[in-house]
Image (cartoon, rainbow, N blue to C red):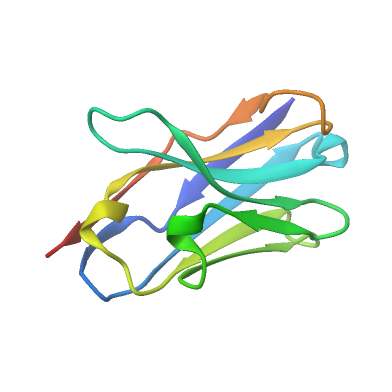
Length: 119
């Protein structure tokens, strides 16, 4: 099992920045990739960005490219999401998740952290 705990959400004005953290514990050696998802009210959950646990390769959805940066610190078993130039449409609950291989679904989820961006 892998246990994930997010932190760092909050309220910010448009144009501002926030950094989310996701601390992993348990069988972290089994992690292949970690991702940040978000779910806004009335919308489906979407994968915003992901990073491979070993190689560090990243991918982003178009709407956050150039504004969000995902990174990891393997020594601390922590993944970060730096969010800059935030927009009201970024408002959502953000979830950290992990999966064990490229063919599997995301198996482990954090509890979520609210990000609210005011206009």
